[in-house]
Image (cartoon, rainbow, N blue to C red; front, top):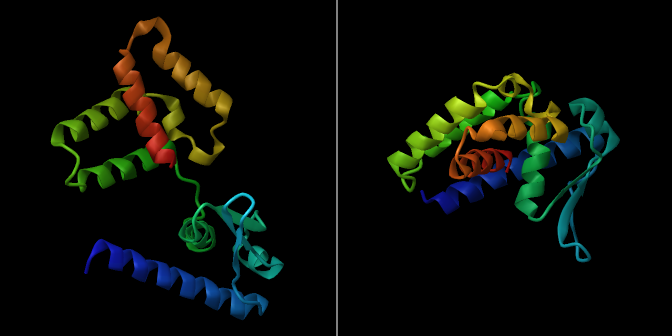
Length: 166
């Protein structure tokens, strides 16, 4: 089975499970709409679904239909416990380790940067969704004070954290 077929099958299962929940709980059909004005896809979530799954948002948006379905699916059936920055970093490192297109040297450097700069900081123990912009700014300021790291190292750490956020 190709990756494309696997992705298509996964999306079909996600779509099927969400549609089933919408029909059973709220008695309505799942409607993904496209707004031509901003180019975004949207799903409105009925009150009964929001109450059962403790969802805080009543609408989900994404640039792709697949993205909006995945965001809703993750909020409905995903982990309820907030994940720490360290957990997300470890998961990202494992994904990169299994990618054959990334060189072993790059994988080793990614691990070293995260160990040295991210895991050693208390911010890595915080839930990722609770870290504010101000705290991110403070984290990066402490990394760069006293010129203790090269610009290329800083860019690598920042790029890694941005990839994890995506």
